Length: 107
Image (tube, rainbow, N blue to C red; front, side, top):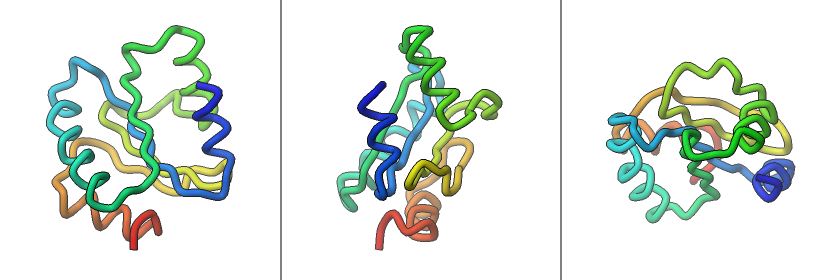
């Protein structure tokens, strides 16, 4: 978790996904995200929140005040210690690519 916290404090865009191993929408979204990630090669942090220890989950949800996110999957972009934008739910490839372009993650 420390590496993730440190990385999100850099002046780099990082795409973070809060997911659960038992969430059917997360399972549908993961291959879409992986395909887009493979094609555009951006910083990605996929976190299955249900597999984290209590301490790591607490760190993860409180670092960017994610204590009230609305379900999984939940995608948010960080840059220089700030949340740039977020996207809730499973999205199709074209919607995800446009979201990443609109937020300067990919060109």
